[in-house]
Amino acid sequence: MKKNEDELTELFRSRLKKYEIPLQEEMWDKLESELSKPSPRKLYSACFIAIAAIFLLLFACSASVWMFIPQEEILSALSEGTVPVVEKRTAMVKAGKSILAELPVEKCDEQEDILKLEEVVESNIAQIQSDSAIDKAQADIRLKDSIRTLEYQLLEAMAQNQEENIDVQFKNEWTVGLTASIEKGKTISSVGDNLEQITINHKSPISFGISISKILSDNLSLESGLNYTLLRSESKDLSGATIDKQNIHFLGIPLKLNWTFINKKDFDVYLSAGGMLEECISPKNDNCSGSGDEQPISIDGLQCSLASSIGLQYNATQHLAFFAEPGVAYYFDDHTMASTIRRERPLNFNLRCGVKVMY
Amino acid sequence: MEDELELVKGCRAGDNAARKSLYTLYSKRLLAVCYRYTGDIDVAHDLLHDGFIKIYKSISKFNYRGEGSLELWMSRLMANLSLDYLKQRKKMQEVIVQEEELPDVIELPEKELYEGISDVQLMLFVTELPTGYRTVFNLYVFEEKTHKEIASMLNINEHSSTSQLHRAKCMLAKRIKEYIRNEEK
Image (cartoon, rainbow over all chains, first blue to last red; front, side, top):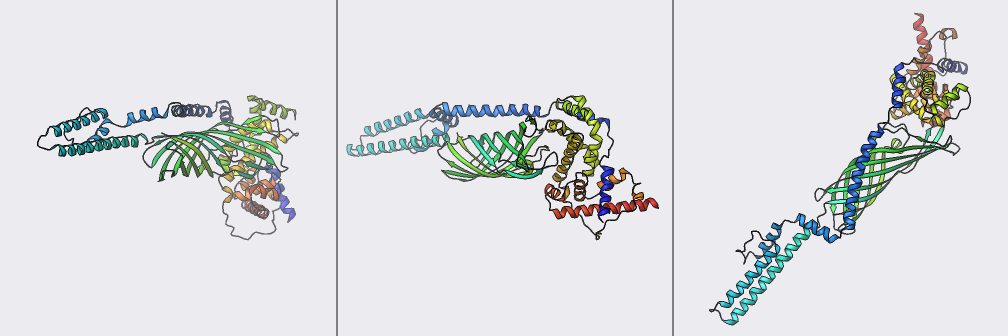
């Protein structure tokens, strides 16, 4: 048996070890053109850098507006822009309509309304004083009641007017945030280029980002921004010696929808779902066993991913919140030849934390 | 030996003529390696293309250890790329229904009879093996890996590696006998 088995092994080994399959000349031409042409990554990179710059500029503008302009000015600017004069007038008219039905409301603003209300009070007083049929005591009582009622209604009208202003002023429309996130790492046994046994330690990927979101309704907001991710891996041979280290830097643009389903004064709970497009901006492989040179890794395509998470947000103030989002992300195959955590474990858990400024 | 070293140096420097010489010298043999692992000639062409790009990009990692070491390194790189392809496409998880009992003893016809079978035909027998059997057979016969190493590389147990190799050999012996029988008719 042994003899025959060896015979069979020997037959295939001797006949196929140096076996050759003829190739067409155009195969080399194709390879040569690919080797000489500039990487399509450069085009992607240019687009990404342009979009990244826009997000960065938007973020910088938002942050500087928020940090360097006094809050009172921002609030007054917002209230001027968002509260229509007619609403203020309506508040006044509602309060005073029982006795001020004749009050002309065309072309009036807040101060004019108050002045006119005061004029009506004065004319009522004059009217009461001039009524000779009523005795003086009754006139005094009527006068005092009338003044009290009008003062009360005037104050109520002003208070209601202010409340309406405040409601509109504090309705946040935009959110700007800083985020940091981490995913689970993984250690795998693999086969090196030389078919040797190696261990690859894919360290936990870390990300930092800026986010900008637009509040669409009470429950919905649309979020985008700019995200930087670092993937680090280290390969070791069986003796534990490091063969190479790999650092891959990604720049990504996320887009996701947030749905808030618990909205309390101090905290919110929301669900997020969306995706991200990432471009590898600096793939490097530091060869430890050979020359020590840094080798570029071939990662030319865009990395697409889908993500979903549940977010817990603590509203420290009306305009400042802290949040934590545990979630999952799925990374689609980008057909890269490099072994990355995303290729080894496309579905990965992550935890994203950050701070948001709302205005 | 001198030529091989010169080629390596030229490729490291990005010299196109050196790259072409390396390609001309080894591409046919390396294409056969990819085909032997994948069993699909179109996929083998794609892997050869990707493999050469990887070779040019990582040739500075290669340590020259005498004559034949360059070819061995490139051949193993191609084999590894092919294994990656098979793992990614989950080809090795194909379920094989074994209907017949396998003989403990593998018998080959007389040497004079199988000597006449062409290399092309022998290659075809290997590529037609189920992926799992073919992979173990390739690693054992051509890369000369032990069952322990194969088991570790493919994340299977040693017994599975031994068993798959035996099944691969039984199938090949059967195909050889059938072929010879048909030729005799």
